[in-house]
Image (cartoon, rainbow, N blue to C red; front, side):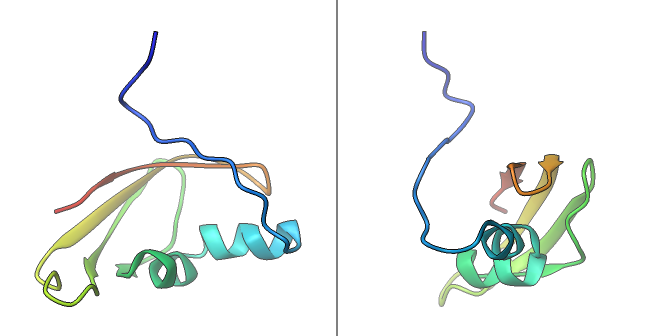
Length: 82
C-alpha cells in the first residue's frame, strides 16, 4: 500500500550533521535552498510564510508548517505553495 501524502528522500551529504541540520532548519538558509523569503523562524506547530524568489513566481506565497523537529534527526513539515 502506498501513500501520496508525503515525499521522503534519503541522501548522503558529506557535511557535519550540525551544519546540515542548520541548513535545513534555519528559515533563512532553508529559503536559500528552496528560493523563498520566509518571514519568521521554524517552530513546531507554527506556520510561517514567505514570497517565492523564483523569477516569474515572486507573486506567490509559500506557507510552511513544521510538524516535528527532533534535533539533528528529523525535520518534518507541510507546505502549501500559494
